[in-house]
Image (cartoon, rainbow, N blue to C red; front, side, top):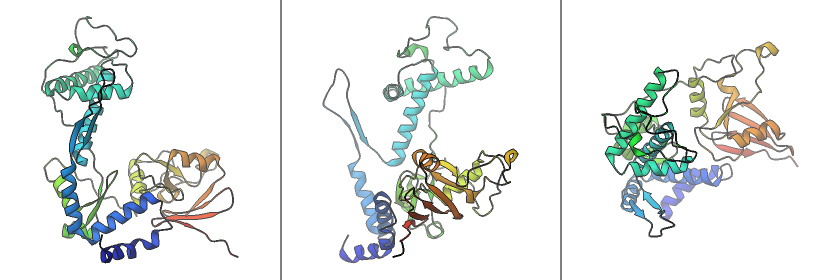
Length: 333
């Protein structure tokens, strides 16, 4: 960036410099630059596409090769979903190799569209048969020509090569967050979960087709508490939207698979627990490691307001965590 634009970015992010981990600060810098310089951001996104490609490593290790790919995010998600779908199908059909080996085999199957179609169809037929019978078959043929595979054995392709018509498009869920201004003007920066900040124009390219389902907007102020320990999907989604990042001090994880922790430990109603313990202002996303630290590592936490947490470390230090990051309480002299 030139000096003038760098100064504008710095003016926005300066107050967060001591509150965020370096990874989150980098993301904020990128998002701020794209918001302040939309033309430059669009140019950078366009030039980055010139770096796309697929490369096969020249090294060969005992008959094994390495394949590298640099794809647009949406294509990468689709390929990953298709590979996982194939790996799951192979497992269901009796392939006992480890997960990574099945994923590699599934990628090879994708090289032949008819093989991929046959595999997906065989998997669907097996799933239907398992749903209809108490004793699901171990293969799809009416004869017993293909015995159960031994441990670590791959499934012979003839087991699943049964050409049928089947939908091969994998389902991919994108979580795109847009400001009101971006929705109204069509300009600005979007936050795509597990991707980062991108321009609204690139979002339009990704979603510019008919196969898009728009989920209803969730009102974060209208979430009814429940008495049970289990968290309803609507409440879990509201907590993730309110706090998209791990609420432990200086954390950087923004995955959707974070644990949702009761900041005040849950007590069963039969043991004197009050009603409505599972509510938005008593839940916070944390990684499994931080969840264990809070439970077993002598850390204490209170959610003083909805999405605003105060942590106390085993050494007596206090940290305030909110949407701006982490602020360490200064000790009075």
